[in-house]
Image: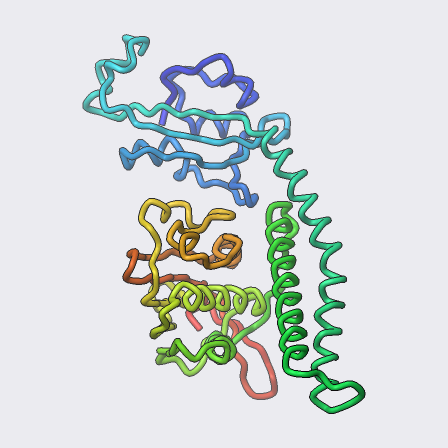
Length: 371
């Protein structure tokens, strides 16, 4: 992709003059300019926003990137790339470049927006949420703990017994406290992700055993849904943060239950894809489904389906955002298919390359193929 024209702000944005006609890859390499994703991963040159739009012929909108300029400063930007369908929309296009364009290549309008102020406001907001949730964590844990102790002592018949009404109220108090505690942990995770302070503690883990354990725990919370696990694998050892993948599974299964208020089957499938060296999960329900107009933004923060709001089902809209972050930080991918009124199917993968398996004597060995 080469530059045809740019406004005066382009040099300020890049920290260097981009000569007309120079390919972008050459310009970036010449000045030592690097592009990163919001999570700090280097952006491959074959995934430049303008190049993506040029290759597909489709707009690329609201893409967040970070530019590291020649002087080492970093600039967060929002990038939009829109292919032109007609060169008549470009009356100022240099005449010497016009003849070769219609048959040789597309013209793409790429707009970079400096979002430094928005990022600073977001940082302050996340800082406040982090502080508030830290302060809430201790009193919530205390309240839930004392409620639990009251119920245990009453069950043992020690001191003052609780009547049915009191026992019910204390039980509700305990559940509400743990619900709020879980919410504060979710908010803390979000702020850690945004601040770049999120760390994974990878250990060798058997995905089959982990999945069975989570399914057993979730099944105990409902008698209206039947969870079934399909896999031909006896074991599948990989290097992951088991607590975080358990969090992903719990969230997806809890959502399948929550958004299937009429009950019904929930199917979990785990397969090993030999060619790509991946563990592939599929979680399918027959619930409410997700409205099509909201599907594109489902993995964003605080995003929930309108049909869920109308039904009065509670939630924060943070769970799927965290699922995406956790899976992508493990090197995997997450996606879904859904039809409103029919149900949803979520897919996610985890890399099995250099997976670890365990032999006698608790000796760990690495494999360079699929585990």
